[in-house]
Length: 177
Image 1 (cartoon, rainbow, N blue to C red):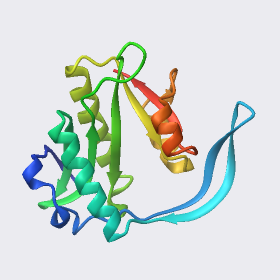
Image 2: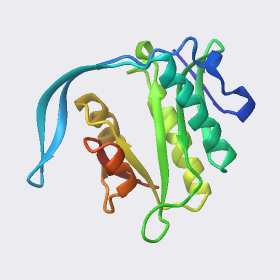
Image 3: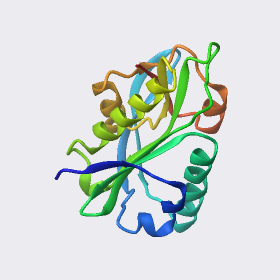
Image 4: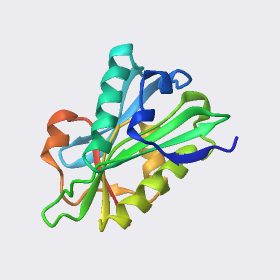
């Protein structure tokens, strides 16, 4: 299952683009930071997006491009099966980060390398923008954390409060470019 990674233009981002994309993820265990130590805790739930979530996503991705960031799509037989977005605005005390605001792979495509390809495209773009690191406010699911750690991501040296406040259970991570 070879996917093609393409940079998306703002006019290509709409609800129809996601018609073959399945966000669904069954989560069992999650990482939680308790008294300064990361531990795995059971926290079962199903993460799935509603039509309203997709509508919000479309507006966010369009905003990313409109403000100078980038959105990449992973396509299989012309159908979107994954995507990622990176913001243009530098983050961090020295502007060392670019924000990887999304990276998602359709349920049936997970485990086939699509996420790694998207991550590499995001990292290459951020590096070309002068960033030293990617910043990732990452879902705390054990599987998601295994993905990021397998790519070499580590706990962020500088937590970005906007992300911590928005998603307090996310793991704040970084990737050296």
